Image (cartoon, rainbow, N blue to C red; front, side, top):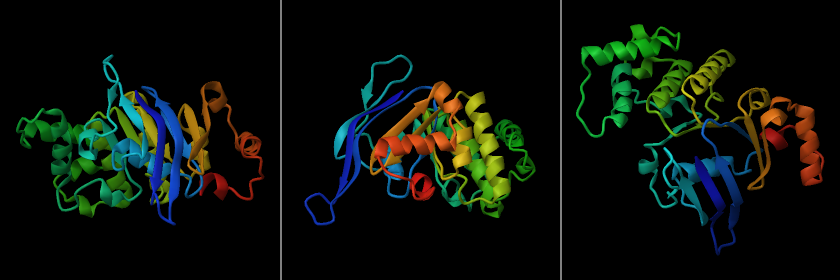
Length: 268
């Protein structure tokens, strides 16, 4: 479980360009949650991810991690590389999650080392066969191309591989930052299908920023809407299951006391 307490993020404090990007964010991410995150450009979604991942330290507030029935640990000051052991992140750009000049097998080897407590491991025959079995899950024929450099893969294949590698590292939380936005519709749906299957099979805890309203409504057990640096909706359970676009627009009007001029106010 990850909890954010009274998080503020201000850029340019004391200057004319001061920007209050996150405002008093309080959020508890429960084990097994699949949270879809929506909001217009500038709502604070990516900044929230950067704060959770440790890329940015909040101006105010604290972040706590609870694992394996242990007491909550304050991770507010933990660097990004430390949080990478338990927080995975996949970006919109398929090129960012893998090393293009290395083979599929070598990429997977680096990923698998996270769980080996510093022991030296090599790409032996047993590991190679294990990797091939995992690649078969993607149903893209990559098990037959395991020695090829990743740069030869399509964007969809590369993003699917990134997703598989993230799952292999067994993160406590997986952050998906518009991870299908750069893909063509066919590959986007294939990656989303894998996302859903992996989340269920491995009981992953997932947060997914999306600009696809169908994905926001269809996937997950919980939906967050951000606006002007605040979480203005946190919908879960049966309410999330029965959520429609019309209901979402109605709730927005009730909370913000204004009309929606376009879907862009919801999705950017």
